[in-house]
Image (tube, rainbow, N blue to C red; front, side, top):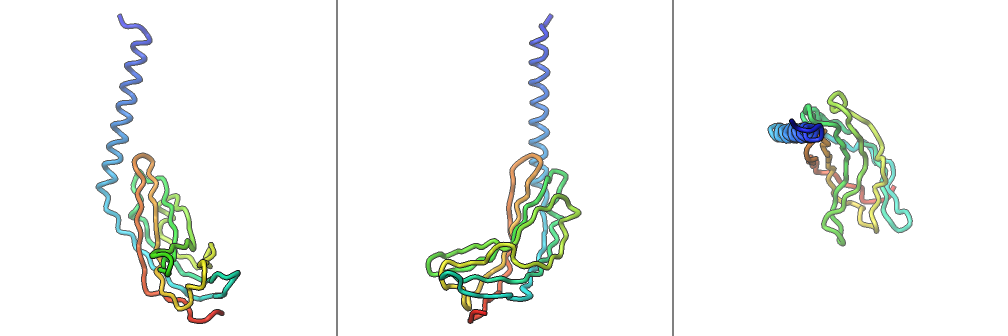
Length: 166
């Protein structure tokens, strides 16, 4: 007859193997999901645009609408989403400034329309923002219950800052 320790070891090994197999199947099933999120951002107002301590700084009011429901599967724990302004400057080919962020805990919160000021300062190191074209990009990171995290984005082009400070 086998000892208690041998039986406990066999049961534990079998349980961990089954758990690993279930986690692998969950990860593979997420690869079959092809999400189709949509988003639209409108800059409704430039509240102020000034030079502060040698740096350009902008405050704006944004209308952000998005439908990210297709990102949620049975394996999704939450989705981290943020809106970034992206532009080029003489020093850097890509500058990214986070303007707003949020956590979507469930599919019920994944379709939203918000009217907000930028949550974080839109500041450039120098005087490079006057008349500057920029993109607004909605980024998201899907955090699963098991498996690897993935990220994607939607880029919205055609935005321009004023030529003069206000």
